[in-house]
Structures are given as structure tokens and as C-alpha cells.
Image (tube, rainbow, N blue to C red):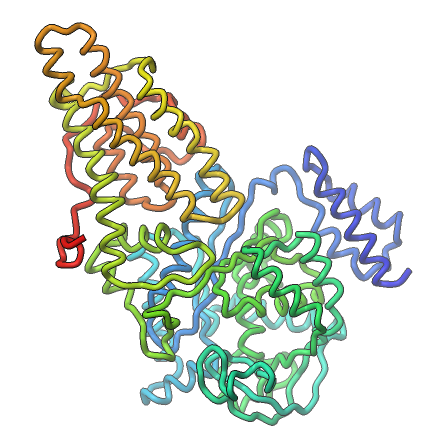
Length: 584
């Protein structure tokens, strides 16, 4: 049986197994069937085992990574976007009681890091140590809750794992050495053909690539065209959004050239991960960088985490920018196929943040410092703008004015105002005690219907579409409706009627206050993945404790335990009073 035929059967069988109703298939069953059907000589047996032997327990696992940025300069707001998006996806899945692991880190072995150190007159190690710390610290400033942080220049896991990965490609016969001449952009750390340049310049950095001639190792990328197309077409590797999937498919379908995967040690200035068995070569930075997703799990050493979160996890998700799509959706999957390892299941691709329509880039010198933004506006404002204003997979232009306007409109005015006046009215009219009532009024029924629709909208946006903007828009819809409900019900007027002896006013005021508090309770839970610190402050004022399980149930209208007593109102989203914000 040919390898191609074997692979087609493998794919068909895997698809049927994975889509069984229960999703529970034992490793023994899969292996026994495969060995009986095809024999144990199949080169794809190992990969089949790894892809389809997913138990019911494993289906409650979720592994997500950011890309790892170069550390030739401090982080900019584009890095903050990816950190926050990935954090929200991880937090969402944790709240679903899914065993989640979130990896981020820094890419420290590139030539551009070496050149940046040379320009400063310091060692490369000094530069990467300093700048990696900046990325590490930014995570805390942005309230990012990652599980691991890998540094590719210093982490022993990475050096050992990358070497093991290289040897797997070598054992497959997919590495060979040859002389090569090409146009190389250091900013992208990749070779370009003349056809890919724009007026002779790198399409991303706008600089003329260097003409490089040297002897390198090459990876037989051309051997994996058909398999990559099958993974893309079958959806076994999902690329979000569809436009990026089409872009990748078109690139693969037009034919793949073999890929240079090493650099001379001399040109790399001796910096990088050594090629096993060849001291004159270091790994191409993208080879060692991409391997971080599995080396951080102990690949090739202690494989416990690797087996748990890569081999036996149904969700292996990369969150990346569109500029590195080809590396993650073509080169990386092909190398994994060569090594006999499972592929990522999802590649989520966000757009660029821009300034005046131009890409924000360290190399272009037009960066926005997220550390300064957090100092000026706070993490809540920065996180909210990145998630609510920026379309999940499209470009967006950043200005301080836009951040201020969005924060004031949605958080200070809508949510903050709703929280403050609701708690104040409960305190004033019911001494802080929240009435327990049923829904009888038409206005209440409409508010309740919007709140009851929210959980499905959240799960659709986050669990299926990877769209924080849509999720926050749905949450804001409930907040806006609750504010309108206040105006419709006019509790201050109803309270006056109650004091004048109107018995029906008491029931109306009780229902109004109860439904406002319930809307806020649901909102508080709903914003947890997006604004974790603000959610905690809201819960303190609403008088209940956030818990780490049962989140889906907590989003339901009338879920227990209900809010019985609120605390004193304190503004948690103070207005930004800059000139532009006030003018708005």
C-alpha cells in the first residue's frame, strides 16, 4: 500500500473516529484496528494513534499559545493585542471548567536581536535579558494569566526539545544540505523571491533584502503539499478567519518549494540553537521558534505535559498576527507531519494595529507603548479598547482619543453608571436588601429576554467564532437595555408613589430593583474573561463572591445564589476627563 493511499485511509478513519457520538475511543481500540487493517509498517501509524486516541477526559483540555515576539526592542501595543486576545480565550475556557494551558514567551535567537545588540554596543544576551523582562512584566500589567513563559535563548527545555525535533525531521529523510542564494529580509527573518517584493522592497518592512549566498540545510516542504491541503480542506486544521484560510490554501495549492532551515554559524554571529551534529550551522530562527509550542511542554524529554496538552488535547490553538500566517499554517504543520506529531487544530489570525493607517512596528519606529497606556488609563481601559474596538481578525487604527471615547461611552457612562445608580437606589429605597420577586411587567420581560439570550451569544462568539468584539457587543446590549429600563421604570417616581401609600408601587419598585441587580449580576459574570479585575470589583459591590466553577450556570437569569444585599456604591470606571474625552 502506498503512503498516499495509507494516508487517505488514515484520514478517513480518523475523521469517523473523532466524530463518534460519545467521543470516547480507547487507544487500544484504535491501534488494534489500524494494525489489523494496514499492518504495523505504516509510516503514519504513530500519527494516527496521536490524532484519534482522544478520550472523554482529554476532550476537556485546551492548549493555546501566543506567537513569541522578537526582543530586539521593547513591546508595543500590537503585542498587547495578541496577549490580551489569547488571555481572553484562555480565561473563557477555564471558566467552562476545561483544563487549560496558556503559553507565551519570547523569540530570542534571531539575527535582528544580534544586530540590535551590536548597535547598542552590548552583548546579545544582555539585550535579550533586558527586553524579555519587558514582555514578561507587560503580562502582569495587562492582567494576563498565562501558565508558562518560555525564553528560547535560555530555557534548557527549548534547546533539548528543538534538537530532538530536528533529529525527527532528519530521521524521516526530510533534511538535506545544499548551497543557496536568495534575498533575505532580516526584519522578517525569511527569504523572498523577486516576485514577492514590492518595487524591490520587503512587502512588510519596506527595505531592500540582502543578497545571501551560503550552504544551508533544507526541509522537504514540497513533499507535504497534498497532506496540508487535506488538513485545510477537511477542517482538521481550522484557520480563522475564512479569508486567511483561503490565502493559505491558495499558497499551498500553487506548489511548495523546499525551505531553508538553517543558517551559517558565522552569519548568525554564533547566536542560536546549534544544528545537531553540525557545529557550523544554527537552526533557522523560525524552526526553533515554532518548536517552542511543544518544547515548552517537555517535548523529547519529560513528555507528560506534551502528551496531555498536545498529543491528547482536542484543542491546540495558536493566536498569531497575519504577518506570520505562512509560518504557522504551512511551514510548522509540514514539519509536524514530518516528525509524526499532531498538527494545531486552530490557527486564529488577528489583524494589525495601525497608526494613521500605517502598521505599528518596532522597525518602523512608530510604536505605542502599552506600559505607558496602562499607567495613563489603567489595564481595564486598555484591555477593553483592544477587545471591543478592534475587530477580532481585522486591522484597526489606534489613537488615544478612540480609547478614551470607547472607555467613557461603554464603561464609565453605560456600565459604571448603571452599577452606581442601581446600588445607590437599592441602598436608598430598600436599605441595601435586594427584593426577591418574579417577572410580571412587560418592560421587565424584555430586559429578562435580552439577559437570557446572552449566554448563547457569548458561547457563539467565544467558543465558536473566536470573536471577543461580538461577545462584548452582546454584553453591552444588556447594559444599554438595563439603563433604558431605569428610565422607563423611573424608580425615583415610583418610590414617591410608594411613600404616598400606593400599594402597587411597592411591587413595581421591588421588581425594578431586583431586575436591575440581576442584570448586573449576569453582566459581572459575563465580563470575567475580558475585564477580570473590574468583574471582581463589581462582585464586591454587588455582595457576592466569584467562584471558579459553575460559570455557565451563573450566566443564567435567576441562578442561585441570588444577590441578597449590596454594598456601598463606589465608582469603578471613573470618567477620563481629557480635552478630547470631554468634547465627546
